[in-house]
Length: 370
Image (cartoon, rainbow, N blue to C red; front, side):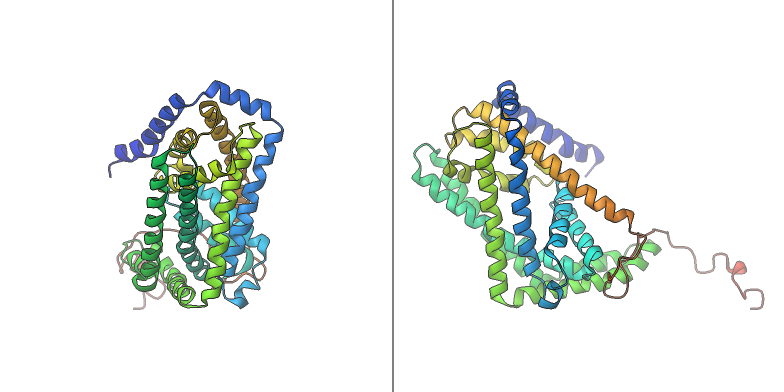
């Protein structure tokens, strides 16, 4: 893709969505609603902390019992918070955020990096069924409510089916496709000596990631089920957050309306991997969905809701980046008790292009006596 096309996708599309959202929303009334709700709207920060804690607990369950004992819940929480911060700012379909979570957990607890990466890959597979279940519940609720647009129930049901199929395909890929081994082989084919040297150490981690995903997906179904239930609970908390934010703004929305909106808006945000934090797509999604479910005063309510949600995300993203940068500032110092598969957590990787084998041969020790 040409650079101009990448810039158009990264900036032009989100700005276009924001422009459409701005035309549908009443920004002036929304700002007034937000100002009137202050300082009570500070409570909007709490639900995301709860959902992160549930997410961290579910992720921690995926590790082997011996490894799990070495992972305090606060460390898993901090790693997930840092990962969410990166995912909110780097358009990479969440992959950059998961890499940040794995790195920080490895640094804080000494859990092998490959094991952390593999558990996060399985986490992604287990999150999808929970999201699909929440979409199915929203579809049923939409069918039972007269003030919700009739076509929305079909959209929610189709999204639930698509996510279920995607989860099954993802599990099959992790078990049979060995994606991390393929990534390692791609690294080894590069022409950069430093990167090839780094691939030797990375090969251990990536091979362990493939083994870990296979172990988790073939292991105890009880642990997988418990983890999947907790991941589903994350989406319940997100719907409660939407309900709370609307109520804090003085919008007389019902819990059913919040449940009908949030799972689909969350899916739209996830599909907008080409823009940080689903910028534009998420905002237009909420502004469009709130009137479809019959929320009173939707133009003003949508504007105020989007502004409050973005402020909440900014606060949590700043906190996550602070954790990550503080840990990176100590990257030159070995963490106490921290180890990976074959030694301490590796430092930054330096790239150097290949040189001929006989370059500077006369300067080598012993060359004169050869």
